[in-house]
Amino acid sequence: MKYHLGFINDSTIILCVLLSCTVKVMGQPLSFPTFLQPVGVADIAVKTKTSPADDATLDVAPNMMTLEFPSPVKLVKLTLHNEQRDWIEINFRYSPSDKKYYHWDLPTLAPAAYYTADWAILSDSDKLVRGSFSFSFGSEAQPPSAVRAAEEALLLQRYGDPTIRYVPPPRTQIIINQEPPQFDPPFTIELRNSSDN
Image (cartoon, rainbow, N blue to C red; front, top):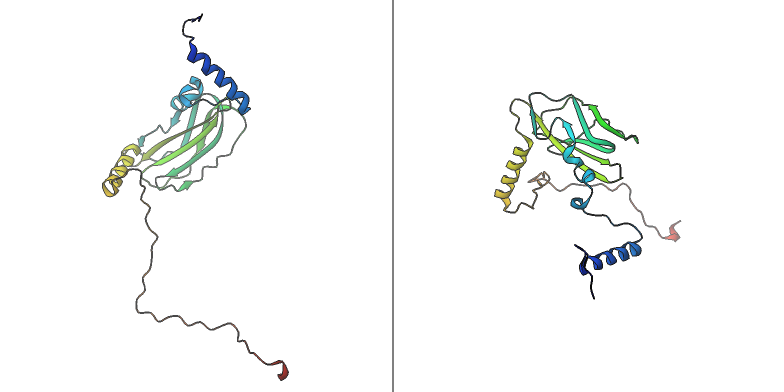
């Protein structure tokens, strides 16, 4: 005789038994994918406020960058680079204290198609969460998303496969009609018989 209690069925019982065995065999708790994590961890990146805002187009270069998280966190990484992946020194240093609001003074930023800030935090449950935001500035600036879309369309048109990333070959010099180089040895070896000594 089988008893069914609401949503509990044979499949649920088998799944529970397998999970408990897996945890015992692995010796550590299971890590669930992002969509199964608690709401506080999964959408920290979505609820984080940044200045400049993501995909913002500004009139002039910003002189400050800020991050405001929904709850206090440990910021473990913050980098800034332009569209060519040239890194900008912003003097980020890790601090073990939990804070909700972070800000940095920026150096004078050179003109570029756009800049991207990448960050990573440890949430209150010690989960690593990553995020990024991009911005551009200047009288002819376009939103970073539009610049990226144009770059991807060009690559698609050129190579036909969006998963292929084009890397330009290194510059080479071709020299024609040049005599082969002459090298003088640094020393001369003289061979003598031992009887000559």
